[in-house]
Amino acid sequence: MVTLGVNLDHIANVREARKTNEPDPVQFAFLAELGGADSITVHLREDRRHIQDRDLFLLKETIKTKLNLEMAATEEMLQIAKKVRPNYVTLVPEKREEVTTEGGLDINADKEFYAKFVGDLKNSSILVSAFIDPDISQIQSSQEVGCEIIELHTGSYAISKDQEQKNELMRIKEATFFASDHNLIVNAGHGLTFQNVEKIASINNINELNIGHSIVSRALAIGLENSVREMKTLISKN
Ligand code: PXP
Image (tube, rainbow, N blue to C red; front, side):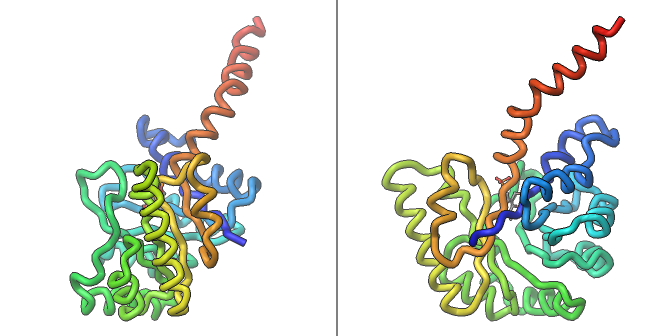
């Protein structure tokens, strides 16, 4: 069965829009688990635009499922990961000016660096996943540097249409089969929605899907009416 990792970065985005203490991703992790989340994913960015260090430590203490920490391969993040000890780390590329993660990690570019970085995490008993494009050479390099897991970037599939989308789906399928034949655990994510997820979920050997934006958007849609109703009741009391 495909499992679901729920990415809570957008909950923290709303909090950081006011620099206050609500909504709290720690509380929302509890709700996500009630809904059936199999893991909780957060991306601690270098610029701390959404998730904060405090969120990570509290999530590690309180969640009942697994913590997946997305992070860039930097010395600062390595030290934080060693302290928090999430169940696994997903290494992602990170650019300050980007709105969200663009493209997969280029492991081919510096295998020596990634081998050392992945080795350091594994020495702290943290499983390591690499967020990569569905590309055979990136899969091979991820395995060579010691990753046990890969997360295939579904962004191009998500934004394409018609024949192009079919081609992207085929690329993801082929990459999944190649990676699982080589004993890698295959996760996938980015841009998945209620409309486009099923074809990805039905690929044999996909282990986990990581989804954030669409789940949080839907939560607003199905929750706003009740929230307004509660506020209306409160102000109509007198
Ligand atoms: N996987 C990775 C590696 C990501 O960086 C993100 C976005 O933070 C996601 C999955 C989830 O993407 P989305 O928010 O589009 O569902």
